[in-house]
Length: 193
Image (cartoon, rainbow, N blue to C red):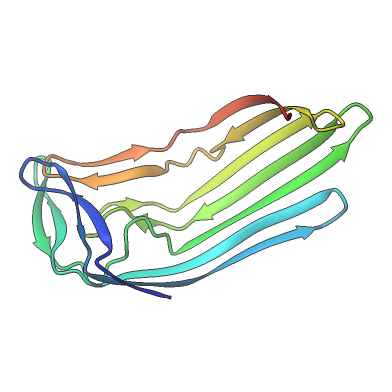
């Protein structure tokens, strides 16, 4: 449980559209975070976690409130964001990873898969821009020498192809989001010295 005074929040100004950081008056955050790891067999491991989080501005009389304008852009005014959720604070997240290890006479093999889920959250103090709930899927296959000195890993990230925003912002000119990379694949080769 946290009570914050003068939490820093970023926004764009109406005049000139430059980004500023200002104090978000008062807010509170409380929740629970649970992490787990279990060895299901001598070769199969499950790890993960889940989090419940409640966030709220308890007082924020000078928040930047964006009101969409017909034809594009926003009217940016000062208003009260008390009762709104804090930006980028999902109320619920969970993830689980299964890892299976298989030694062989010529190499150690490791197969891993991850599933995660994040509940929707807001990107601005006025709670106008929203990241929808999304799932995350990742997978990898690792082959290493029996002494684990050299390895090759094939991997894939964002396999569920969910659209995930890394930035959400409002200005007088527009509301904009930047997307995280889409489905990504790769290969990593390495050595330990």
